[in-house]
Length: 218
Image (cartoon, rainbow, N blue to C red; front, side, top):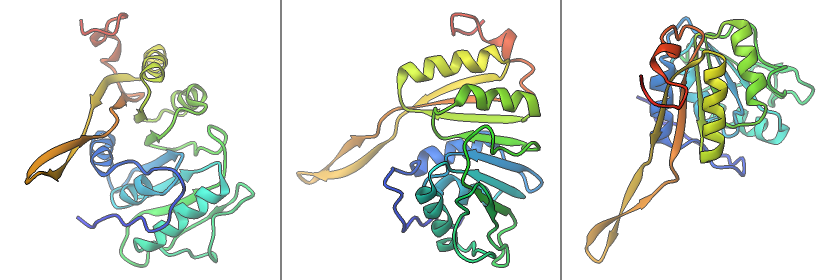
């Protein structure tokens, strides 16, 4: 698989490659899927989703970060048709698919949930801003698959309750990645911050019977 290049900095860390791999596996994107993303930032997830889905709509509320998303898309073979930058008025610029990427990608400078499309099949929340309203929109529009990544324990607990209250929750995954480095001729490890991943969607028919109200499995 093609490597994701992120030469342009959004002054916020991208979703780490290992986390992206699990995120995309849980989203299970197919060529006929419309993928929506809240908080594109560097475009790391946007780029990898564009290699799997048929259509991608990426929301970023900060114009500077949306510009970074666009630049990193271009660095990975997605060139803009409409002259250079994400629109700063809530409008859309569409990268070309001429280089062999199948997805039709849109980058929107907009807040969620207002800027979200009404026909998304899969949704990724890279942060916790307005997440309850975003989940409400997911229920309203019938999003099949929803994944939210959280790095703070308290937010993860509240988000799990919000997923559960809306019958969206399939599972909560907690994982941590460590990278090796040389130390005194041997290998030691630096640990990344743990990630809490909430996975579900409106087709999660077994969410309520499988997950107890205290968070345990029945």
